[in-house]
Image (cartoon, rainbow, N blue to C red):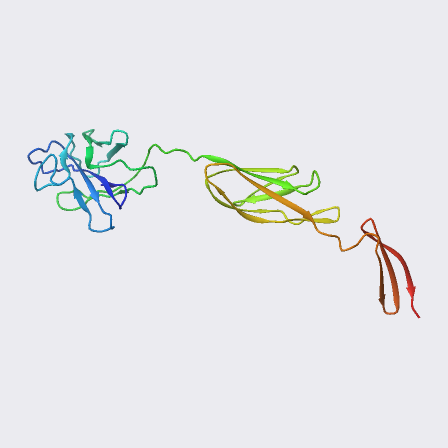
Length: 268
């Protein structure tokens, strides 16, 4: 059985190697449209069955060909839904005997093609009654899946002296540069970032005014300006300081933002 989404109307497809063929049945495939909007108590349509009439729901016993597997046989089942034509096709082939059963069905107005989005599908094997004891070995899914579109997140540094190294970490990935530009390429999404801060340059600390944040990428490139500012020096150029401790006087003067020792004096 193949079901795409537990909510809404969705096709369910079952190959039955031992069908009870009634009037109007031609093959071994059953196709139902299952409605399960509340997550429980599903209903099956179309009802009555388009090919069997009253007392049946869905398309029961459709298709051509037949297979009758033996214990241990490997069965390859392929189901394809064509959204542009709203058509289901399926082939079930016994890989041991090469017998096969197939069908093609246009769902018409009974089923509306789904819009783009994320969908859940499931595979199960019915056991009991007139069914065999099935074991699921392998599932593969292929479809018209568009690759994600990537966009640039550009970080532009302002305020550092030319040639100073800095870095940005975006979503756990760190890029560094000595130019004012750092670029990441990412798909749509929400990403956290942080920038190097503080950065020491010739004894002066430069700090980012916003060292971390969040960027939202939604179909376009994003630019983030990273502003660095120097911290003010604790030394004031041209100032003279006097320090007295244990009757000892120490004179200091600041020239070119660097403290200069003037002399040591013993106080009496």
